[in-house]
Image (cartoon, rainbow, N blue to C red; front, side, top):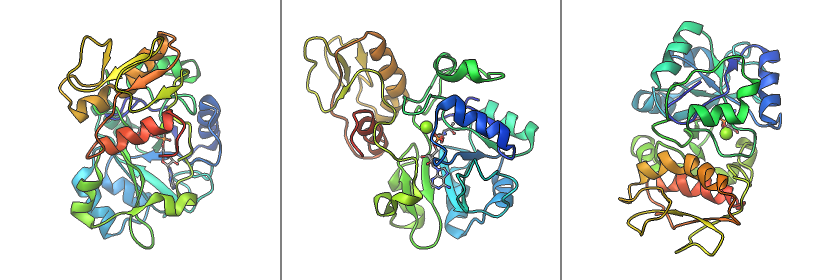
Length: 286
Ligand code: TXA
Ligand code: MG
């Protein structure tokens, strides 16, 4: 299933057999819960308890690249396995027209983790999704390249302050402008079970903050530079860099380099999510 962020491997959220096959296809640890995708806020309301903060964020960013983790209301809508047994559920209303059409026609929540095998970079084109898990899928929808290119921002709206569990396409500043300061996810590791090191990793090692490549390395430049094979954004635009990141990591990897060296990326705005993915690709906990 295409979404505006990355391609997902979709299944009926209520069907434990289907959900088990998604975990199996990805080689994903069973303790890492999935996101339930729904058609609209009303559908989200039926499966989770969305407080005022959640509602504000949903109004502002749905449909779009934001996932809310909220207390579970209807345990039958998203099966236990999909939630990894938690009494919370992650919900997102995606913005991609094909995803929206699929969800509207299906009429029930659809789990869709990124369609990569566990630990690998997320697929942002149909071809990359097919390469990762296509042999395990009954069908595939080609929605073209993903415009955002980074996974959704995950925010927990539970008891206490809202927490940023995964930086993503909706920036910290955009969220804080609506609901005030976000607490750090690190203080609450048990509530963000998917945030392990060495994630999003290509086969080649990744070297960060590189001014230039060493012999044998592939180089991902950022901003004006010579005629580099890979430039995340020649104009230094973070949105463009986000959209290119995973596809370029994969393309660089295909050249079988000794390592992939990546130029420094500014940390503000979307840069927080880009650096989070790069740190994990390099094996550092972000
Ligand atoms: O952009 C996206 O979110 C993509 C597209 C396909 O929608 N999906 C995606 O799914 O990135 P996945 O499974 O790769 O990442 C889901 C993240 C994981 O970090 C997981 O641990 C977290 O959401 N998550 C899911 N349910 C949770 C819960 N109840 N509590 C805390 N974290 C949860
Ligand atoms: Mg993923």
